[in-house]
Image (tube, rainbow, N blue to C red; front, side, top):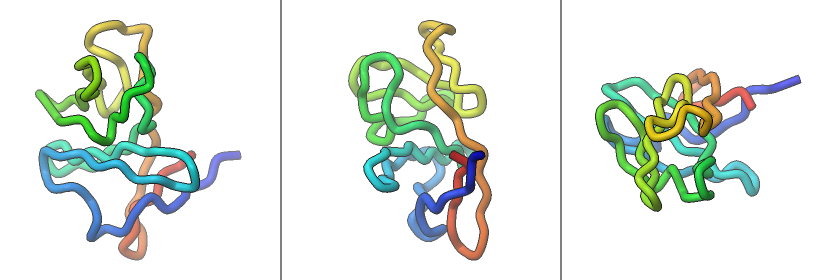
Length: 102
């Protein structure tokens, strides 16, 4: 069964329109702030393994810095190829910490 795990403190969240990478153990997560809404995606791009947490946000999507694949932060669907999806996690902010259900 999946559990909520700590990703970062609330004070570490990216500013509006930005993304950040966080490591939990050895796993990378991409935390995106799209118009004030926080989304957590797998930090590894499903296209070719790029670091999503080092990308940018364009038109409400996270853009991988390696090849420009864009991912919807709600569904994980790629704009370039609907068969390529980034995993998106349910999130909560509790006691000043961002948690994701993984």
